[in-house]
Image (cartoon, rainbow, N blue to C red; front, side, top):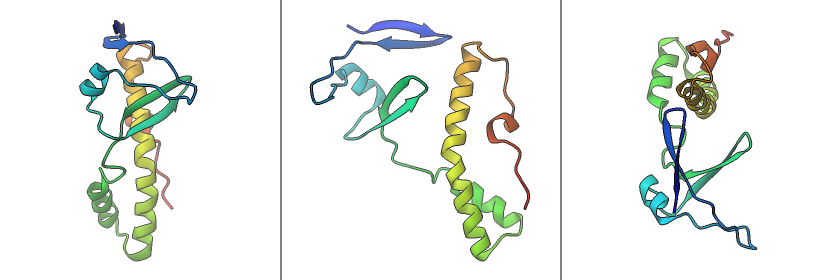
Length: 126
């Protein structure tokens, strides 16, 4: 039976899992259903934790329209636009992961606040 705990204000459920000789685990049915797993999962190392979550179907294109709109408004076009767009897209996932980690710290009162620059940094103009 899963144990219920809280981390800051976020309720967490935990269940000890067995690992087979082939390094396999079974996701408990309750967690599988609650989180919306299908046929694939993402496995992420975050500090000293292993996070297993449902695979995301949209990878990196979440902000494509906003990125392109900004770059075009700043006057980029052609190959320069393409290269800057690729660079910006590569920065989306790490920035979102950093935001989530920082939000978790703020929620658990480990940190006071964060700013836009703390998460995304200050953009270098070339």
